[in-house]
Structure formats: structure tokens, C-alpha cells
Length: 371
Ligand SMILES: *Cc1c(COP(=O)(O)O)cnc(C)c1O
Image (tube, rainbow, N blue to C red; front, side, top):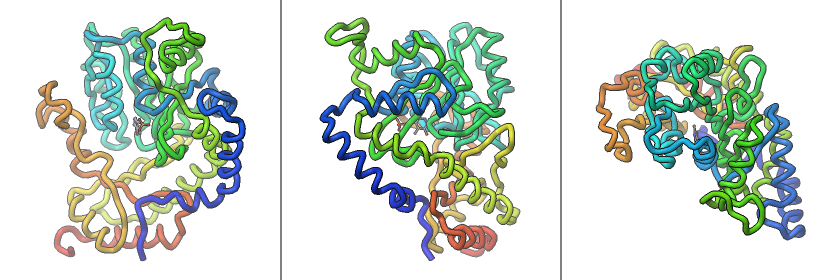
């Protein structure tokens, strides 16, 4: 048997006719940027998240960058980010001229550890980006409490958390503003790049909208030196087809996760913390840890099972951030996570036999000796 890390086919096959109709609708309407589909999607997604405003942008990276820019975060400022996120979180900060400051995650949940945040706060700190990594929200009450104490703004990086909930509230409604990505592989993905911000702050929403549209508040009138970052009509139309299915797709992932969590019993494998009523996980990825990770990867690959590492090199050790001079050993938890994580196959439409095949392979792993 072969089990890919992920495939879109079962999802797209189910909604193929509606996707085809969307393409025709947009083609016939003849408006390809900032038309009806984009506006409708923004309303529907804001509704879904339980916030007042959603503004479509070109990517998740742009969403975070434009929020930071709208908050006037700039050179000389510092923004706290978890050390084990996707590099986009840190790049969004760097683009504003501010410094990303890396805080350690909790090893059990992979999310930023609130007890390691305060030690990183300085007189220059302006904001905390709470990443909801892997589809599990960060510990938002603790983060918001620290932010309030030091007068910092909390921004959610919800790129992996469409539909995830914290104490009954959706990701996107848990901080001052949030950035989402609609990169195809996300739980809600377009057929290309896309993103959005969500917020209850009308001034911020208007400013992000203008900044992403060449700094224009109305045609040929420019109030900021903005950029071009908009969600296309075509992608918005596809996202409108997908959004009503999102909860079902997330439930499906939780069911696969449940299977992995209850049936993988090999002591060499460390499982992630399960979804709970307080932290409703959407399992964007299902990440295990193993001290012999590279051997496990080979072992699974030899059995036709696709895996990925989210992420193999922590940001502070990436060449791109050489200039920060943060050395190996300075963020030991993030480094340990990078050295041991492996993401298992997880996708809508995965068959029970496929999940069972993955479980069996993991339970059969005996370490380097049985390669
Ligand atoms: C995917 C992702 C991003 C960036 O989104 P793009 O749409 O690819 O720019 C940012 N943060 C996290 C945590 C992500 O997973």
C-alpha cells in the first residue's frame, strides 16, 4: 500500500461541479480583482470566525505584514514570535524593519510557552504574534494577560488554524487581529496563493485594505505608500465553495487524529496533545516526535508512507537570519522539536485502511536496528 503525506483529490472531487461553476461565474462577470466574490467571501469568513471584519490579501505572509504595518510597527521595535513556527511569521516582522524576538515553545503542544514570554520583553517590544501551530490554538488567556500587563498588541498567526477554537471562540477572534493563509495545503486552501486578515477593529481593517491596494482609499487617491496585495476574485470564488465544507473536513481530520492517538502505542513515538473542549484542534498537521526521527522517516518511506518535517531547521538557525547571531543551543526546546518532529499522513478522504496501515508501521518500528 502507498499512503501519500497528503492529496487534494477526495476533497476536490466532491466539489468539482461547484468549482467549475465558480470559474464560469467569475469569467462571465468579467471582474477579476475586488469584485462581488471577494466582498462576499470577506463577509462569509468574518461571520465564520465571529468577527466584524475580514480583508482579503494575497497571502498569509502579506496578511501578517500588513497588520504589523497598519499598527505602525517599524525599525527599532521588537515583536515576539515563537521560535518553531514557519519562517513567514518572522519574515512579516522583518519586512517592517522591526526585529523578530524568538520565544520558546512548550514541547507538548508545540505552541509558544507563556511562561517564556516575559523574559523576552524589553522597552522596545510592541507586539506578540501568537501562532496557532498545527491547528491548535496558543494559550490565549495567558498571552493576552501578559500583553495587557506590558501594553502589547496580540496578533494571531492563524495560517494553520481555520476553524480551530479556544474556549468556544474561533481562531481569528482571539487577539487584536489575525492573519490567515489560503495556500492550497492549508485546511481552507485556494487553488493558488491567498490570505486575509480578521479583526473587530474597523480602523485597522480599513488601513489594511488601503495598504494592500497601493495605499489607496478610493480610486487614484493614495494616503499611504502601500503595496499590491489583494485576494483575486477567482480564488475568492473557490474559497466560497469550500468554506461551507470546512467544519466537515476538520471533523474528518480530528477522526483520523483520534485513531492515531489511540492506536499508536509504540513507546518510541511521542504523540501530540489531543483536541479538547478548551483547545479544539483542527490537525492541519499531525506531528509526532521520535528520538530516531530520521530512521523512522526512512522506515516509513520504505513502506510507501509519505511524511514531512514541520520544521527541520528552527528560524534562528536559518541562513536568512545569520545576522541575528543567535547560536545553536540558545533555544533548546525549539531545537529539540526541529530535531525530532515528523508529520504523518493527514487529509480529507483518507481511508481507514490507510490510517491503519500507518498505525501498524509506526507500531512496528523498533529503532535503527530494524531498518
Ligand atoms: C503558511 C503559513 C504562513 C504563510 O502563509 P502564505 O500564504 O504561504 O504566505 C504563515 N504562518 C504560518 C504558521 C504558516 O503555516
